[in-house]
Length: 104
Image 1 (cartoon, one colour):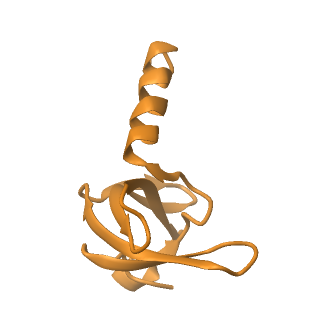
Image 2 (image 1 turned 60 degrees about the horizontal axis):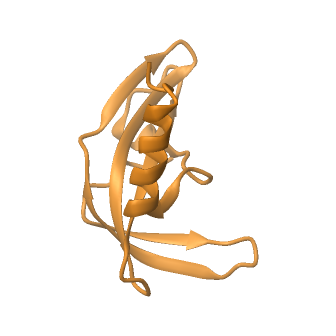
Protein backbone atom coordinates (compact mmCIF):
# COMPACT_ATOMS: atom_id res chain seq x y z
CA UNK A 1 0.00 0.00 0.00
CA UNK A 2 1.06 3.60 -0.39
CA UNK A 3 0.36 7.11 0.77
CA UNK A 4 -1.11 9.74 -1.56
CA UNK A 5 1.84 11.98 -2.32
CA UNK A 6 1.79 15.76 -2.03
CA UNK A 7 2.58 17.93 -5.03
CA UNK A 8 5.17 18.37 -6.44
CA UNK A 9 6.08 14.72 -6.88
CA UNK A 10 7.93 12.66 -9.47
CA UNK A 11 6.08 10.36 -11.88
CA UNK A 12 7.23 7.53 -14.11
CA UNK A 13 5.12 5.87 -16.78
CA UNK A 14 6.21 2.42 -17.95
CA UNK A 15 4.90 1.41 -21.36
CA UNK A 16 4.15 -2.18 -22.42
CA UNK A 17 7.50 -2.30 -24.26
CA UNK A 18 9.16 -1.40 -20.90
CA UNK A 19 10.25 2.08 -22.07
CA UNK A 20 9.72 4.83 -19.50
CA UNK A 21 8.54 8.42 -19.52
CA UNK A 22 9.50 10.56 -16.51
CA UNK A 23 8.25 13.87 -15.22
CA UNK A 24 6.70 15.66 -12.29
CA UNK A 25 3.21 16.45 -11.03
CA UNK A 26 3.57 20.22 -10.77
CA UNK A 27 0.05 21.10 -9.60
CA UNK A 28 -3.19 19.35 -8.66
CA UNK A 29 -6.69 19.89 -7.37
CA UNK A 30 -7.51 19.06 -3.78
CA UNK A 31 -8.15 15.39 -3.12
CA UNK A 32 -11.82 14.41 -3.11
CA UNK A 33 -12.76 11.43 -0.94
CA UNK A 34 -15.57 9.12 -2.10
CA UNK A 35 -16.85 6.59 0.44
CA UNK A 36 -18.23 3.30 -0.81
CA UNK A 37 -19.53 0.08 0.68
CA UNK A 38 -16.65 -1.68 -1.07
CA UNK A 39 -13.92 0.71 0.07
CA UNK A 40 -12.89 4.32 -0.34
CA UNK A 41 -11.73 6.21 -3.41
CA UNK A 42 -9.68 9.39 -3.60
CA UNK A 43 -9.56 11.47 -6.79
CA UNK A 44 -7.81 14.56 -8.09
CA UNK A 45 -6.84 16.14 -11.38
CA UNK A 46 -3.10 16.59 -11.83
CA UNK A 47 -0.96 18.78 -14.09
CA UNK A 48 2.17 16.91 -15.24
CA UNK A 49 5.32 18.24 -16.91
CA UNK A 50 7.26 15.45 -18.61
CA UNK A 51 11.04 15.75 -18.84
CA UNK A 52 11.12 15.28 -22.62
CA UNK A 53 8.08 17.37 -23.68
CA UNK A 54 7.18 21.04 -23.82
CA UNK A 55 3.42 20.49 -23.47
CA UNK A 56 1.96 19.92 -20.04
CA UNK A 57 -0.42 17.00 -19.55
CA UNK A 58 -3.56 16.37 -17.50
CA UNK A 59 -4.11 13.17 -15.53
CA UNK A 60 -7.35 12.15 -13.85
CA UNK A 61 -5.80 10.33 -10.90
CA UNK A 62 -7.37 8.04 -8.35
CA UNK A 63 -6.51 5.73 -5.47
CA UNK A 64 -8.43 2.92 -3.76
CA UNK A 65 -8.45 1.97 -0.09
CA UNK A 66 -9.90 -1.45 0.80
CA UNK A 67 -13.06 -1.68 2.88
CA UNK A 68 -12.30 -1.47 6.58
CA UNK A 69 -8.92 0.27 6.12
CA UNK A 70 -8.61 3.83 7.41
CA UNK A 71 -4.90 4.71 7.39
CA UNK A 72 -3.14 7.18 5.11
CA UNK A 73 -0.72 4.40 4.13
CA UNK A 74 -3.56 2.04 3.07
CA UNK A 75 -4.17 3.71 -0.31
CA UNK A 76 -3.42 1.77 -3.50
CA UNK A 77 -2.57 3.58 -6.73
CA UNK A 78 -5.34 2.83 -9.27
CA UNK A 79 -4.67 5.18 -12.21
CA UNK A 80 -2.53 2.83 -14.29
CA UNK A 81 -4.90 3.13 -17.24
CA UNK A 82 -6.46 6.53 -16.77
CA UNK A 83 -6.43 9.66 -18.95
CA UNK A 84 -3.03 11.33 -19.50
CA UNK A 85 -3.06 13.71 -22.47
CA UNK A 86 -1.87 17.24 -23.26
CA UNK A 87 -3.96 20.05 -21.77
CA UNK A 88 -5.33 21.15 -25.15
CA UNK A 89 -6.49 17.61 -25.99
CA UNK A 90 -8.15 17.32 -22.56
CA UNK A 91 -10.00 20.62 -22.96
CA UNK A 92 -11.16 19.63 -26.46
CA UNK A 93 -12.51 16.29 -25.18
CA UNK A 94 -14.32 17.95 -22.26
CA UNK A 95 -15.87 20.56 -24.55
CA UNK A 96 -17.09 17.83 -26.90
CA UNK A 97 -18.58 15.90 -23.96
CA UNK A 98 -20.35 19.06 -22.76
CA UNK A 99 -21.81 19.68 -26.24
CA UNK A 100 -23.11 16.12 -26.35
CA UNK A 101 -24.78 16.62 -22.96
CA UNK A 102 -22.72 14.03 -21.15
CA UNK A 103 -22.51 16.22 -18.05
CA UNK A 104 -26.25 16.44 -17.60
